[in-house]
Image (cartoon, rainbow, N blue to C red):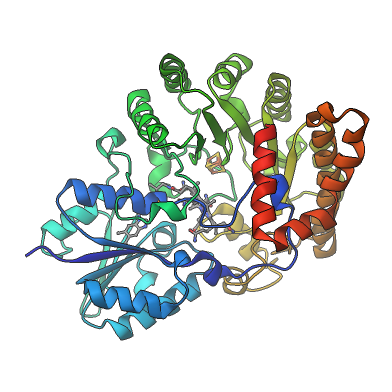
Length: 488
Ligand code: B12
Ligand code: SF4
């Protein structure tokens, strides 16, 4: 008999809580999480169905309480409960697993996701209730595990224990990701989400010091074919979705694939389709011709992760880009009419307040919509984390900040002799003031239809108190987001 499996997305806000210092979410264009179904679990769920494994899926973000989870799990009676885990909030993740194991002692607990790849064999020491861990991408490995009657010995990308011994079989990544059909989220409660996100490539060969695209995926960048992505767009478009967020780390990594995809979208003529590049595209991977092509087929929102305002800090971040390339991309995107968001980090190794002023200048140089400044967070497994640890610069122990409420990056995680904690904190306040200005200018540009009234309207809408007021009332907040999206 086939094993019964429940896949679980633990509640994000219960892991991390919410911070009192609201950033300008309306500027950022973000909605409440979960806006979209979890893509990684979507891929797993799809592959399981393709291979004949029926299963249950629970998004704990959509449940009111743990007892709802317990009731539903009791009803389904799974042999295996599989949870996804990210590092932020991991202690609460372990706590949840302990609780689940206590309530369902006969079910095996398996886990996957970015956190597992970082901790590897330490996983079982931290949380002995876990039976098996999956490292990196797991579609095939999970199915192999089930096919083998849950015997882990011959499975790739798996962590398991036998008696007191712990074993790790390294993953082998699938070179042809077209093999994994795009998720149709059949086991998900789709009406609860605002739409689905596209994930069209995997891996990134760059080495930014703060990023933990794990070592396995670094070795292999793989892109889905234009046909495969188009099939996914076509499927959801026919179901009524017209705004497509793209979640890739490196969407334009393959220039030719991007052009092929644009050509295919153009040929199909999807009226009023919009693509939003929310996770960011590298400035060195878009030129004016490519941006123009993308814009013409519906790419209207673009995020450019500049990270810094000068070459010194970019070098320190090992970003592999120059400020000239970054400025060129921002300028081109603005000139072409994209709604542009630029991302910056605060407090790179060696950075000073004076360097940060270059970031503030760049943030205001072009007619962008929003610039997000985040205190740089050292995530375990990154070069930044190792450096901060070695230099003993942490302001709080990592297990504290990785499990606390200030993960909206307003509070600094470390400081350096040349850039104090107080300055790092101030940087976020200054960046919010800059955003107020940027949003005012953006609205004044977009509301030209109002004639001279555009200035007072833009002024009022861009104030911090208006933002805070909107956030308090979900209905108003949603309407504001909708209006803002219509302006793009
Ligand atoms: C899109 C995205 C988001 C979206 C999620 C959209 C969605 N609903 O899916 C949003 C904006 C909500 C988001 C939020 C956050 N994110 Co995010 N996000 C990403 C991003 C760019 C892509 C994720 C993705 O879809 N990957 C594609 C799928 C196919 O891969 P996958 O999710 O890893 O899943 C595969 C395997 O991991 C494995 N697997 C995963 N879960 C499980 C479970 C089981 C049981 C098994 C067997 C296997 C398994 O199998 C899957 C299929 O191959 C990644 C970067 C990246 N390259 O992955 C960051 C990333 C995952 N995010 C990260 C972070 C830090 C966050 C936040 C904490 C940010 C914050 N402070 O708010 C929150 C946490 C939210 C949460 N609890 O999940 C980090 C995680 C770092 C870490 N060590 O944990 C990443 C890696 C970015 C980075 N480079 O630092 N994120
Ligand atoms: S930040 Fe972006 S470009 Fe840099 S390593 Fe991570 S995914 Fe790659």
